[in-house]
Image 1 (cartoon, helix red, strand yellow):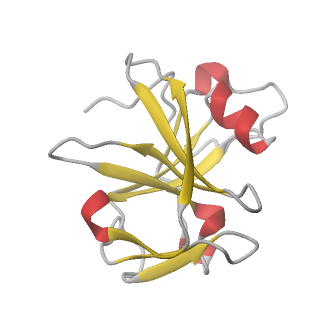
Image 2 (cartoon, helix red, strand yellow):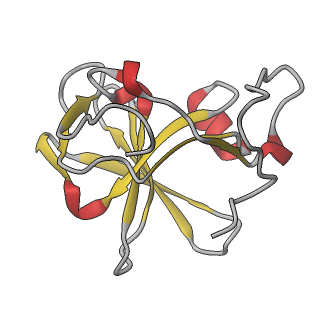
Image 3 (cartoon, rainbow, N blue to C red):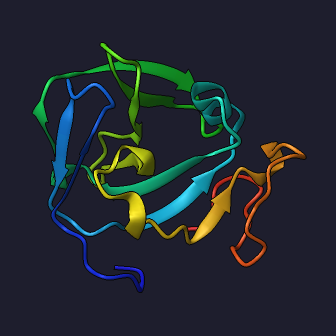
Length: 144
């Protein structure tokens, strides 16, 4: 995993404890998303994201409520929240054969191992958003 100590399996959940999850895979990527939608749903300048294969993620308590927004690529962006406290847990969920899910690093039980590799949607970043100058920057999505 990306040059950081192995962390799988790892767990997380919402602030009120109604939703809990676990993930059995190492992250595929870790990043900061500065898109305008992430700013609005968090009230902050970006969302720190841990990207994992969907098949490795499972809820162990509760259910998520979903909200959909349009994304640049034209398909809906699916984000999961706790219906009780409103904590955002997931984003960028897809149901494709290579399905991935983004987990908010702030929902991890131990977020200390989170190490972003790059910033995305820097074209939407606010002037007061202080980004790490050492991280690669992408105006929108990173190249595949």
